[in-house]
Length: 130
Image 1 (tube, helix red, strand yellow):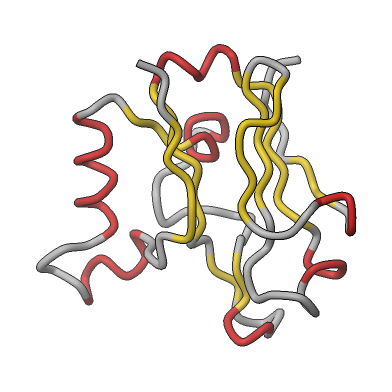
Image 2 (image 1 turned 60 degrees about the vertical axis):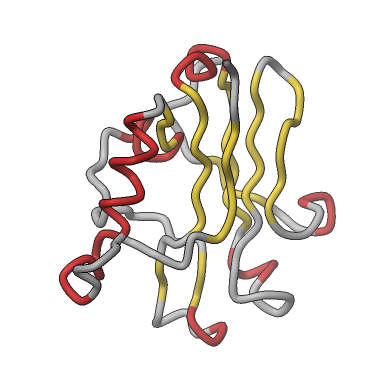
């Protein structure tokens, strides 16, 4: 089927060694076993823990960026994906330490994490088909 799982996972492969009993890579592996893929990692060809766009700034500090928020979809939705936005920190950090994520599948807004992007700017991450 076509499934979307998104939210603040409060985890990243960067911390896997500290959490050996249950870590981010374990979660990603289990999601992969049921056909779920991270939009960000799929389209950017990045390994987990190598993210270059943060989704969260610890205590709203621009010097402490992390990628902790994820959008996983079933593989069947990947060809239908056309947009993925991470809110611009300069416009959102006063409201939250997490930046809003917005993604589009088949031209329809299907999910949003965070506040309304119409209240502030977003930054598109490239690599998504038109």
